[in-house]
Image (cartoon, rainbow, N blue to C red):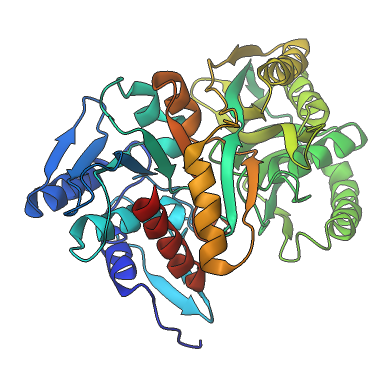
Length: 481
């Protein structure tokens, strides 16, 4: 691996410290304590709200006291995806590696989403050589799995006029709107029955897929492991008289599933038919996704004999529903080249004790009515299959402010620094700005950040030179707002 100088050094030093602190979503207590201690050691006003959000306030530098207060905001949790399932995210630090101009982690998500945002705020708080007006550094909890910190933040916790969200993934792009989203959960109740005699038991696995963010990467034609697995089961279930023993597929609601597994049984007479069907199916899928899934792995192997299975009626209704349910891009925006509405079949979990199979999916749209329609489409599909379905309340989108003064300054300073226009756009992913716009009407906001790729997967990586660019841009905005 080639070495590259990590600039700005202070930010990467802070990022290294952040990655020593375990911070899975909903388990951010260690990070909360770390940030509180960090602010107090600097002698700055540091507060924690009832939810666990942390705010550290830093006064203006001399001569800048009349500047408006600017809020810098990032989330403290990270998506915890290991490459092999063995990493202990609750206790172990993230190990980072340098590969050319990229920083990545050793077998896990890197945590630059949004640890690099935290590091920038920490660097600003500890600096004594940067001009800025009053600033409020805000660190929210549980953004990745529920936007809990933003949901539960009470009005008045933040007091600034402008907010810069440091949770975007493409340097040179300034985000001014985002999609809203919701989750739909379907539960199939099944009857455990005895497995017939004379069965061949097989474990079927799809793994090694690219995955990625279920919002920002949904239009990149990446395969969904859950859909592939159920697609095969649908194709072969009648040809082989297939029975379902177990299904454990997918993971986080906001990640495109990379892995899916099922244990099935077929009569011994159909063993070779099952294997032949699998070989034909995998060859077709490899060709279909040859550009986006070069590392896909497909495995069918014999499994230990089992005595109990899901009743065939429920299994077939489940498989048909998963074959039929919408997944991926549903509609594009009419005015700009951006996904408007999408859905992601995120996870399928069979619980042998509860005799249930639970499916979680997420729907996103920049239009509230379209989001409702997408969720109802998913709901209707699973209801027709006999599942119990619940659609969550969801979170709002963030509409563009055509009169944003913060955006005006951000664009001007970018042109001054880099001699070119930044791209001003919306994002299909959800941002906490949507909730802030409800709680703080009139708050002027933009979102930007350094370039990240492979977010929400073990392939996550950070383009090192873009950190300096974002830092310079941020400081220019603070100086000139």
